[in-house]
Length: 60
Image (cartoon, rainbow, N blue to C red; front, top):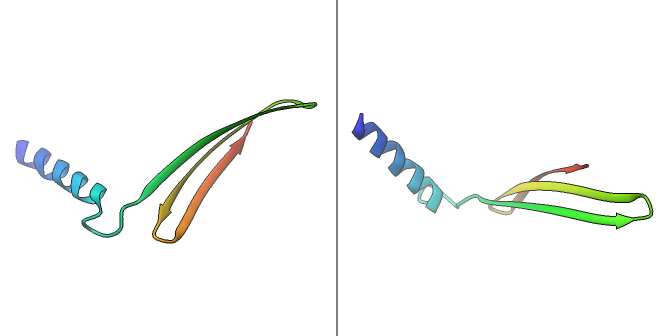
């Protein structure tokens, strides 16, 4: 069982540093705005893989 745990940990470390390809760079952000309509809050997150950005946003 320990070997399986070490193997999974090793794979996670290797995939995180980009040995299997270019590393994935996550991003996150929060926007808060105050205007005549009240307070607006936006939350977003995304991933950059090579030259492609994938993102998701939510306005509250």
